[in-house]
Amino acid sequence: MIAVRDFTYTYPAAPRPALIDINLEIAPGQFVGVVGANGAGKSTLCYALSGFIPDFYRGDVKGSLSVAGRDLCKTPVAELAGEVGLVFANPFNQITGARFTVREELAFGLENLGRPRDEMVARVDEALRLTGLTELADRSPYALSGGQQQRVAIASVIVLRPKVLVLDEPTSQLDPVGAREVFETLDALTGEGATVILAEHKLEWIAAHADRVIALRGGRVAADGTPREVLADASAEELGLMPTRYTLAARLAATQGVVKRDGPLPVTLDEAREFFGGRQREGA
Ligand SMILES: Nc1ncnc2c1ncn2[C@@H]1O[C@H](COP(=O)(O)OP(=O)(O)OP(=O)(O)O)[C@@H](O)[C@H]1O
Ligand SMILES: [Mg+2]
Image (cartoon, rainbow, N blue to C red; front, side, top):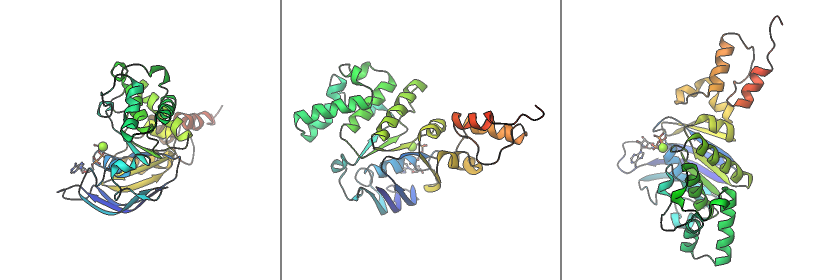
């Protein structure tokens, strides 16, 4: 449903492209983590997949990106609201502050689109439910915790019903409680059929929630597979990816001969449990 073909993008006056020869197909309902070192191109891929290139970020584009057959580079970003939506790292960038309550904040984008009142109410209620904000609907967005504010930012995008939700490090300003709230919200959204594309440095969260991990290096796709295939691979560190503590523990145990196992190392707690729990105790 998302198709990226031979996509190369150079920011204005940049000496070299930020994305090079990207080819991807992303199926509806997938939860895709985009990982890589600083400067690898994660944010740029987010901007491209949400239609901000070249409409907002000008520069030189080669190849194509499309969502449900609509070319993202040839459609003005305002016309893409039903296709894709972008959530930024800092919820303050997304909350307009033009309204007094969470409910009004969510209705704001729809008012601008001139939707009928009944439809607006229904969409706002649905977005509140999906983000777990129903109880907070009449509070001021500014009276909420960071995690709650980021959920308001997500809700203000999903109220427009994009098929694809793109998030650029949405938990980087949040504590672990806030990060958990955001990831649980994203799980709920993919459960309802939305496609989620998430650039993230917190690899343990990616390992636990994403179906697929795309690793970028120097603007190119360097690895693409399940979290375990990409993050537990010996070459992950060369891509600037810090292994999860489960991978580190398992690797140490395997190197020291504490656990004898073939196959991939664990990246999540559940996989680690299986890796360590099923071990044969020698001499026991
Ligand atoms: N507005 C811009 N103009 C010119 N070059 C840019 C611009 N934004 C980013 N770049 C360059 O594009 C490349 C990719 O940057 P990008 O921000 O996409 O990386 P990133 O993976 O998101 O990094 P980080 O982990 O720091 O967020 C880098 O070389 C960066 O310097
Ligand atoms: Mg970035």
